[in-house]
Amino acid sequence: MAESSSEFKPYIPADKITPEFTISSILTGIILAIVFGAANAYLGLRVGMTISASIPAAVIAMGITRIIFKKNSILESNMVQTIGSAGESVAAGAIFTMPALFLWAKEGLINQPSLLSISLITLCGAILGVLFMIPLRNSIIVQEHGTLPYPEAQACAEVLLAGEKKGSDAKAVFSGMGIAAAFKFIIDGIKAVESVIAVPLKAFKTEFSAEIYPAVIGVGYICGYRISSFLFAGGLLAWFVMIPLIVAFGGNTVLFPSDIGVSELYAAGGAGAIWSKYVRYIGAGALAAAGIISLAKSLPLICKTFASAIKGLKGSAASDKSERTSQEISIKAVIIGIVAIAFAIWILPPIQAGIVSALLIVVFGFFFATVSSKMVGLVGSSNNPVSGMAIATLLISTILLKVSGDTGAHGMVSAITIGSIICVIAAIAGDTSQDLKTGYILGATPKKQQIGELVGAIISALTIGGVLILLDSAWGFGSKELAAPQATLMKLVTEGVMNGNLPWSYVFIGAACTVLFELLGLPSLAVAIGIYLPIELTAPIMLGGVLRRLMDKKNKTQSSESSKGVLFCSGLIAGEGLMGVLLAILTVAGIADKIGLGANIPAGVRLAGSVILLVVLVTLIVCHNRSAKNEKAE
Image 1 (cartoon, rainbow, N blue to C red):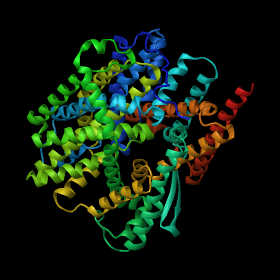
Image 2: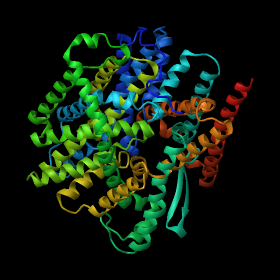
Image 3: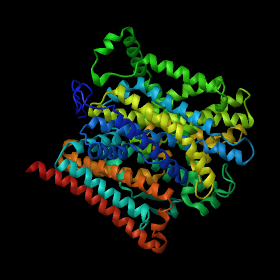
Image 4: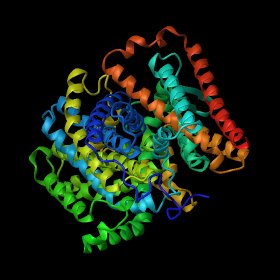
């Protein structure tokens, strides 16, 4: 049975004061925010995905706090990871949209984006993302404790707690970290094996694939069978129903946005090409509809939270007497901050947005901050489809701008500006939600964490512009080195709406699917995420969920006896994240290509190695559960 918020007791009691928001934690967090932001910007522009930085930041924070500063404060380490993880989120929001501006500049439609405009756009989104999350904390973090699993927040807390404890718990976390780091280095460092096991199913006009990364399986294990199964169900619907139907009935017909026939597209790129060209739009429509429904369901609780927060403005005395673990930035300061940022978006020339855009940003920003925070609670920030939310925003905002007469290049720039700010808002709100959940488990002071999140977000926003300009100057967005796949899709969506040639039928199919899920009583948000994500992600998440189900049944429990497995999987997520950051640094430094051995290893051998690694990983997870059962028996 899940633990309710009234029964929950944090690791550090509310009446205990320990070092938290210190000069050393702030400076260390700022450095990590800049490093994680730059590394993830490069990775995201190259492969279209970023890595979550909360857990790597927690591990590094723990090491720096204890080894360098000779301190033993878990809340201080938590503050470092709170500030440091903001860099990854700001980078994710910026790289998924803003490169479209650079691509239009190369086409001669607009002038090259300036450092000032990029920084201001990102800064507005970063601050709003944190501010929007503050009034949502009580409803999402506190009152839904035990309902939303927050897998990566739990993993982050377990990593920090492992540093406080001695014995088998810490061993489980750090053994998972070491194993995952080694696996990640073998897969993406020396490239000795394939990262994805793919099985073409030509008779069914599709394929089945699964990543072998430890972190993805670990997320599925922590989420559990139920949530993993709904994600996988969405993946099955996309890859084993929608794709075969499109190929079977499409024939040689040329369907937008492809410029070749469906059969030719399938022959050239397989099921992945069909998913990328068509099904992804269906996923975006499903995700947008699920987000609207999710917000509608949350409105009563959100309104209640706002009402209680406004009541707290009657006097500061009541606030001063509140528990340390309940203190937050005042709702008055939040409202003033939101109004000030909205005014800046409207009035500052470098942002190139008007009052309509400012209003759209406030409305959609709060909407997607809510949705993003709940998604992170379901699947973790690594699998939070921020770009899907950006697509939904671009669809609606571009239509509204077009209707209002703001068309052409200026209208497209305005749409991307709105999309960029919303994307940053969604990313940083999800990160803030995750960090606040970690702090809730550990007993951190929410107000200090919220200030720390603002510090990390502001610093990251002011530095990401230089990183984008540097990378574009070095390789150019849209090139082989920096394909910028997400931003290219955003550009396509914006141009499609403005020019009147967007495949609306796919978007409406996705929305209709979401309505169907709701009528069947299914969690539409989880299933919609499964449609939008490639099956190579949902399949290993499902594997992790199945392993959790089997171990729970074997141990005849739903939580306690599986804790060793949860600790081990938490270590898997942390270890892969740390090695991912290291490999990103090696890539930027030009060292990664020199250590890669993949070109010298036959494809069959690499695939066999992938299968072996997957079997070894599953065996290790099972063994850690057995060791936990044996320890209890003793």
